[in-house]
Length: 368
Image 1 (cartoon, rainbow, N blue to C red):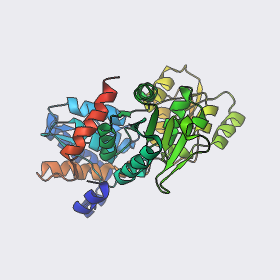
Image 2: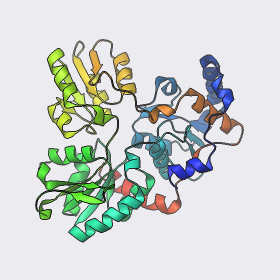
Image 3: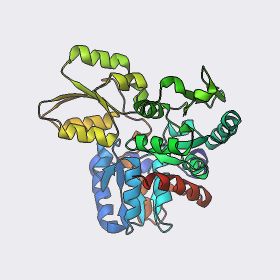
Image 4: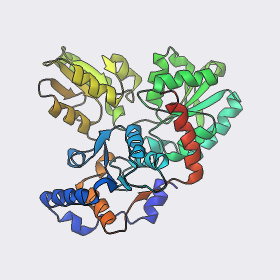
């Protein structure tokens, strides 16, 4: 079931009474419910969530890490996932049937994940097989829908994270001659380039035009990049880097590999959210950094490291808008619905979809 179908089935409008509550009232009630439910409740919070939500999280991390921790927490009957839709889907795939995964606001989606739907992907796969036959294997970033993970698993492929993308691309090229990399073209391009694959051996599949974008000999293609991107990370530009170099020449620049090839190439370092956090933690006091990733996380890192000079690579960057749909009123609404015995916004992935999605996840985890 797509997020749009779920939205139709669920009354997603926040009840009016939550809009009139003070912050103090909401905080007190959330803490009360957490105490009441105890071990039955588990609240994972993604790094990009607002502080007003993160303060109630039982653990923080990236999407796959949170789903895995949720699966290990077998005492929890209710997992209220403070993230976006595909993350809650992954949690539902990995947790037991007895556990219920709840997304506080069903409108919390991911523009990148939505750039590759299953119908586009199946159509693309058929057309690409006409070009390349049985020489391809699909890989998908974990920032994708359950249906895409399932498609990849069914066709012998695996999921990847920004932390293990290099390892998984190397594995895939040992399995087949070519890779279809979904849905983020930038992570795919940056990873393949790091592994020595020339840019002119990479093509782009445009799902809107339903065509392969490439100039040259088709036989040279090693990586087929889905034309998708992260709306946040694509907003970091070469101009941003030039401004930092001019105004703060002493600053080191670290960015996420969801940024464009040009931005990654001009930066001092790049890596997953985990790597960015660990790099700043390990940096000496007094060092200066410009970080190219989501603003909520950058602000949190700045607050956690007052001994360092840290700025956002793009000073005009907004937080991830869909991630920010999870706020204190929606979290309280989700928690009270549990206490009232009528939990809202339960995320349920169909069994057939889960089965193949687990195959894709397992192929990755076997190589962790």
